Image (tube, rainbow, N blue to C red):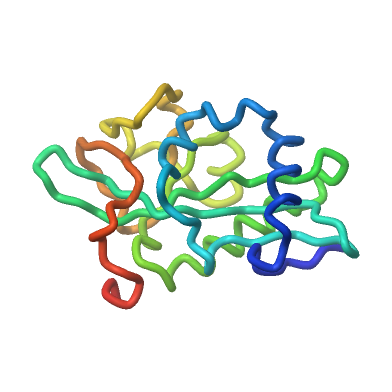
Amino acid sequence: MFTLVPIRDVAPAAIETLLDAVFGHDRHDRTAYRLRAGVQPVAALSWAAIEGQELVGSIQCWPVAHIGDRGECRAMILVGPIAVSPARQHLGIGRALTRRAIDEAATVCGGDALMLIGDPDYYGRFFGFTAHRTARWRLPGPFDPARLLALGDGVPDASGVIAPAPPDLPSAAACS
């Protein structure tokens, strides 16, 4: 049985080891990592799954922005990476981590506009993510448009670039 704890309670080296095991050492070359450049994860939405003393899963969420072609800027949250130890997959750990992050999202700025790059069947079936409003988004690197998914009432349905959140986006307190 696993327990969810704030990711800040886990050694960063353990998280990096898990991410390497799940995604490989070349994971930093992926487009999603470009969206995380220069920003810190959202602590309230970043969790770890622990069995005994062992890290078996993690999720981190990141502040990003949709910068519309007309100049408007909308705070959003990039969900992921979501990692589950290969030996513990298919036990519901990833679903529990993702559900926890989604459930807590209303507490942070941009939490009504979640996005991720992932399997549309999985994230659609379990959480309701779709590509319905993402077709006109541009990202800083290659991606499969069918895997660019979003969830929430605040998801922009407009042309624009997804980028790391600029430092002048409002804090969570200013969003409420």
